[in-house]
Structure formats: structure tokens, C-alpha cells
Image 1 (spheres, rainbow, N blue to C red):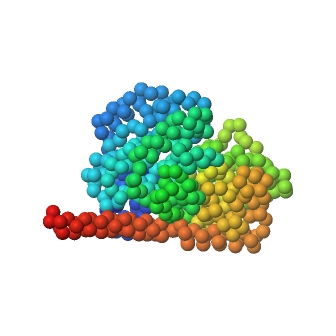
Image 2: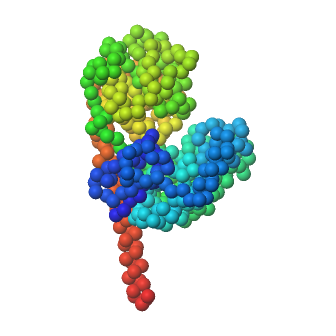
Image 3: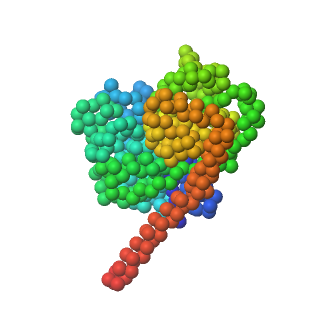
Length: 435
């Protein structure tokens, strides 16, 4: 069985998950290759997606465009649009011929936007496709997370992201292209969270598709509990304070820092002021420095797993106040380190956090309940030990890399065997007909 993974990147949430899957399938003896647009790993077996003469011309034209790509150019007709990522995927690519050349039995798509794969290219791959969805883009008219909009259950249009009041807008155009290109096209979808599976099943594009839930995996031998005082010694963090940790790879509104701030201020006023310090990783210290109610430290981006694992293990609680999220890797890493997590009960958080078992799920966007959850985790030492133990146990049972890879291997094998069986049946039928 030959498997080809296709992903825009080898880093970040989606890219990191795809590359970990590639490595572990390889370690299990599966014949697997990976094709990416942005290769950020030193791995000769990972290939960079080819560029046809037309694609090269497109990239040359893009150098003449001020601060945007050709794929995003139509968005300029919506100057008041929400600045969240919105992908059109209309620019030609050269992937179909490369896939045909590599000859895989199964193609596993991951995050394919930023101009990597045109919508109409999918049906030209002529291979069984497993598409791992890391967000909602596959079944929307262009947005990657829809917030409260459910227009993807119909045909999009009048898009809130575009600030459009017209049904026949850019989002309807993207939705129609997907509907035409993927009509009667046999796709198997994989979602990392139950929430995203539910969204996909409710969509007009994938309501009849096969959808499997396979959580992403992380290296639980690297992300593991470490003696908290030892970790703090390494990081030069205070030993006698409770540490509240927050992390996001960028200062992204969706990650909820604007809700964390008033929650921490509320916590400070409720008697925790001299007992807690806050540590933030992922983006540099803002200027002016926001008042979080506690002494705070900004670590910037932690680019290696060892530093991340130390930070999680040194903290008393990890807070992820996202407005909408799939299966955030940061929460998965934190619980693997035995650190209880507090988040709003949105998206895929419930797949990671068992309320009052390994953390706390606050009512969506209720700042006071978020503060209450942080206090609940910190206030009882005996209860805290149970939370920490269950957090680690959850990671071992559901998010180990070997389990992650074996689930995919079973799915790929099933699809490969189905194709071989279909081919044999066709061959027998042709023989009987004397062809």
C-alpha cells in the first residue's frame, strides 16, 4: 500500500499533525510520501509541490501585487470584510500530474489552502481520497471558521465574513464551485474532533459523505509530567506562586486573549492577587502592557518541544479561552504533561477536557465562569492531584502517536483493499465477456 500525504506546511497545528502522521506511518513500515508547499523540516523524503509554467507565471504576477496573492485578489472587492482567513482556491496548480507520477494507492489531504490546491483539482487526482479536515473550509464558501454562521448548511451567500448582504456574493461562488467539482465524488472525511464531524455532517456539501473521527496524536514521551519545582528551576520561575499559562502561536482574536484578561482581573479581585503569576507564550509582550491583574511574563515563541514541555509541566493550569477551535494542540500537549486545562465549552474542547475530571469547561464566553474555573482548579491540592493524573491518563489513552497512526493505517488499508477488490471484480467481469 502506497500512501501520499498532501499538506501546505510541515509546521503548525495542521502541518505538524500531518508530518507526525507521516513519520509514524513510516516507522510502522507503511510506504508513505509527503508533498508540501512549505517545507520547514530537514527531511529529504518530504517533497516540495511542483510548479507548472502557468503556476510560475502566477507567482511572478503576484510579486507585482501589493501585499497579497492572486488567489486573494477578488477579496479586494470586499474592503470591509472580516480579516480572518478566507480562501478561494481558484489559481491553477500542478498537483494532478505529480500525484499521477507518484502513483499512490490512497491520497490523504490535510490543509491545502494558501494557493496549494485548486478546488477543481480534487476530482482530477483519480485516487481514493481521505481528507483530514483541520477547520471548516472544505464545506464553507471560503471561511475557515464560521463563528455563529450556519449558511454552509445551505449554499452560503450573504456572507458575514465578507460583510456582504447579497446572496450571489463571493462565498456563493466558492460554494458553487465546490458543489459542481465534488458532485458524486467519493470522499472519505476525517475530523480530529466530534464537533467538526457534526458540523461537516450538517453541511450541504458533505451531508452524505463518510466521516470518521480520528484525534490528532502527539509525542507523549516528550510531552510528559516533570516535577514542577524542577521545571521551574530550569525556567527560573517562582516556586511559591501558582502559575497560570496561556499560549497561542499568534496574537489571534479567536484565541480569546481579550476574554482571558477580564477573567484574570476578576480572579485577582477575588483574593488571588498575591498567589498567582501569569505566563504567556506565543507572542511578544504587547505595548502598552495589558493589565492582567497579576504579575505577568511574556516568553515569545517557543519553537522547540523541550521548552514547551517544560513550560506546561511548570504551570499549575493552562487556560485556552478560544472563541472557536477544533482540537487545539496546545491543550493536548498540556494535559499530556499532567497540567489541568480550563477552556470555554466550545468546538472540540470537550474531546480534550472532561469537565471537573481533568480540567474545567466554562460556559461559552462567560468571563466570570472562566475565572471560576481557574480558581476551582487551583484551590484544592488533593483535588488537583486527581485532575493532573486524569489529564495524563486521558492523553495516554486517546492521543498517543502510535494509536493515531494505527487508526489511519487501518482506514488507508481498508480503502486500498476496496479498490483492489473493485479492480479484481472488473477484471473478472471483463474476462467473462471475453474482453
